[in-house]
Image (tube, rainbow, N blue to C red; front, side):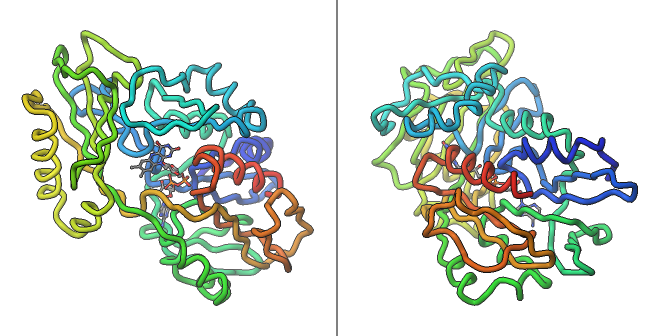
Length: 356
Ligand SMILES: Cc1cc2nc3c(=O)[nH]c(=O)nc-3n(C[C@H](O)[C@H](O)[C@H](O)COP(=O)(O)OP(=O)(O)OC[C@H]3O[C@@H](n4cnc5c(N)ncnc54)[C@H](O)[C@@H]3O)c2cc1C
């Protein structure tokens, strides 16, 4: 981990990406060190690259960002910025079976949805470390000591966790005792669906002859969604082959959650061929299990008391979500808000960052 510039923490606070497990630390000379802990870019906004051609990509998790009318104004700067940088573009390709509410607007990311996360990490100025799996969080002299699978523990002033709630509950150390029984019960009640995603990469010049860019499927026990991913993003090139993604239904994923990825991939592919007979052979495939895919519970932010109580304004949170009492330096947030997911993530991130 390296020292950031003196202003790096401030910038990171302003631009903390929603997708991070972020740790903030004070440097020995008053400088601020900022570090994010992620095993990869993007989290559930994952974009896979073909090993044969890195320009060929496929979104394995989130597919598009929905802007609701209510948040079009509130989060205008977010959308304006991403549109200005070409990171988001309006979704114009046909997605069959998509349920659209009045006033909603959908956006795709031409470089893949992980480019949103990459953009914010870059803008934050933070030094980012990847592939650190946090296993324990303990309190040591008013600091949070974070242990990981490999490497020695490190101490931080502030910890913000944004991983799915069940993964927060798996963390060991003092954090487990700092979560009250009542909070634990509420956190345990957060339910996630599971899904598999299968990404297929094709050779340049391959034609996938369907009139849509995406299709929601309601009549297949295995397949819920198919997208010709490059078409969804309006990218057609003679040098880069097309890519396709299949999302399974939740019941299929639950049934095969503990099976080998190879077996599951085979089953998904067989079903895909029955839906799209004559589909060309892919050159590369990538199967991704999403054990914690999406949550239907309302988004909450939890703070875990001490080590250092500070006056905090929680008025931005709806009253029902506020937890009275002393506030601390530990936040756990989750998505699945009644708004669209991206608007929910934005709202929570905007609420937490000024407090940090
Ligand atoms: C199949 C699928 C389809 C979706 N479709 C859409 C869509 O079309 N539109 C939409 O808006 N949303 C969609 N979503 C939801 C959207 O992707 C998520 O809501 C959003 O990405 C959540 O972001 P997050 O930062 O809260 O969590 P995550 O993206 O899950 O980020 C958490 C990060 O924490 C890391 N992590 C976990 N445990 C640890 C640990 N112990 N130590 C260190 N790091 C850890 C994870 O690896 C991950 O990188 C979809 C999700 C899935 C899975």
